[in-house]
Image (tube, rainbow, N blue to C red; front, side, top):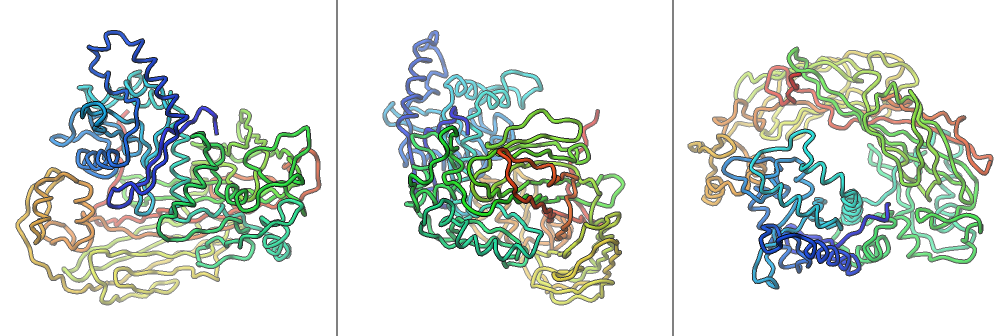
Length: 635
């Protein structure tokens, strides 16, 4: 991480918006106060400057921060804020007045300072990250001039940012790279809070070598065997798989999983002190921090005199040398089967790596398939050095960290077309009965070694309780839950490879009778919605102080069918979700040739490569109903 990133303070708030943990860094705060003094001394006509109080040289205490955050929530209309200016709701000086969606994640608050006679002071940029029931706020160090520039944006009369204009939020953020580091800090802390600190999976293809490798994870190459001396071992944790059990052939992480439990303040304090001493993030890898705390160091761990040991590799590996690469892609799609709306499909992927190499070697390899994948976003681990890429290849050289890590992340197109395509139709025969039809094509145009290991289609009915259904699919089996129908086309344990199939499923579904009281509808700032039989709800509806929370509460309750065109789905949106897993190759075309991987100094180390693709939000929208879609820009 760049040394220019420094953190002034961070706060963790619970669901009641009370600060449960905070940390301020006096060394960084001293730099901020010096910068504030410089800009205040050099500014012209300071007494007449209407923004002179926006540069606040002091941090609020926990009570002031909590109060200001609650006030911001009321002002912006939700916990995260919409970031978009809304008539009769956005006020001058608020984040939504800036009219930019990024203010959902980079927020500002107005703090009332008792030290300055009750004046309000702008605190920005606050990185907002929600994890579990906690809110994480991180305040990075920036130049005071950037804070004043943002304060001006909060008071401008026009709406939105014109393209190419210097005084825009995008231009300010480009000049403040510390914000990126603050996001990394917030995400690392969030992972620790919810216990999601297991390293990325690295899948092994060769089954015969798995047993010895798993044995070594508990002995020779676990935390106990990373260096040549004996160290206490923390029990390794198996990574989760779609079936809920650890798969043979998956390299597990050496990090303990914290699990769901109350906030562990001691663990967070130790991580913050070790990962970002004096407010400068050095190593946000919890695996390294845990290993260092548990095992310490010894003279036997020192690297050769002519090499510098990087922060991301606190221990030197000893044992059988080898490298594993896994391309893990997640495919997202919205399929409409309509002439007026185009289908959308995208791939987000990452290349996971585990390099079990002695010493501090450099590994180099070319990434191939960039041209075929039409890569839109490509980012690398800090350990990597990247040269300019050619037409279809990208040369990468890196000094591998310890354990499993993500070498590359990317966004790309699907080079093979949708693995599942077709249509879904649903219409209501009566208030309590609907008729549906699926017609799907699986793996059309896909050839070996691509293999679909499982596939399931789910029809959710969140507003209605399923009583029964009638219908027989051409392939697979059907299960029902209280609020959904699940069609298992390819169950786990079977697979589809080297051919395509067509699957159809016509049927009807019956719901429990709808029993609610209907009340007259009331107009609100967010459209026409029915009032509930609660005085508190009516009051909050008329007030509309929190639009997003009001909508979420509406979604969690049964809405009167008089306010919806369809009685079982909120806002009349009806869809089916597809879940699947494909192995054998990436769908984007991204690939690594194991024979092209080179190591310096040269060493004989086998290189194994694997690929897997899982579904993300893969949605079939009802052809006969309403559906949300993005408007196409008119050129």
